[in-house]
Amino acid sequence: MEPTLKINDRVLVIKDTIVPLDIDSGDIVVFYNTDTEYSENLLNEYLTGLQIWNIGNINNQKNAAIIKRVVGVGGDTVEILENGEVFVNDDKFIILNINEGVNFKRETFLIPENEIFVLGDNRPNSQDSRYIGTIPVNNIIGKATYLIYPIDNFKKLDDWR
Image 1 (cartoon, helix red, strand yellow):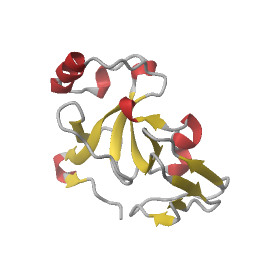
Image 2: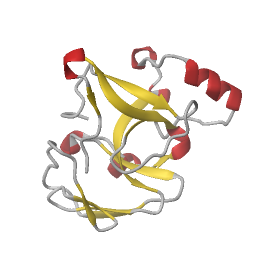
Image 3: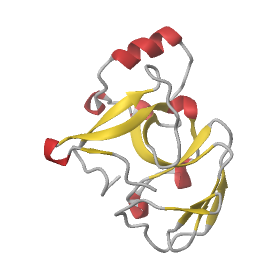
Image 4: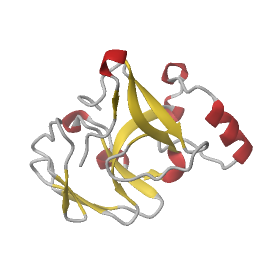
């Protein structure tokens, strides 16, 4: 997610088990790998939502959490051009201060309902929906809302338009 987030940065994540979230294009979300098995258990979801989430304690790659930016939601059409420009439903998707990259393959993605399409902000080096496919909304842990550490870099994560 560089340059938006750097290694060892810490973010405040609002979990969807505590507060209902409205996930939109531009949001930064934390989600489980698409290989993670999901089973709906409201009590376990609530108890997990109360815990402090620590990426450093996750040893199993299958259950590893990933952070990426939402580009499209269910029903959207995402088009990526050769020069790295991204369009969502024919509108240019702009993130401030990132390198969109070059030498991409022109691709169009239709996002299924109840799924999201994510890209990393370091597009030339990101394993994202271009490679792993769309992400089921059930895999979303929460929305990253603030960069909270290092404290000198504290800011709201709202650099899209």
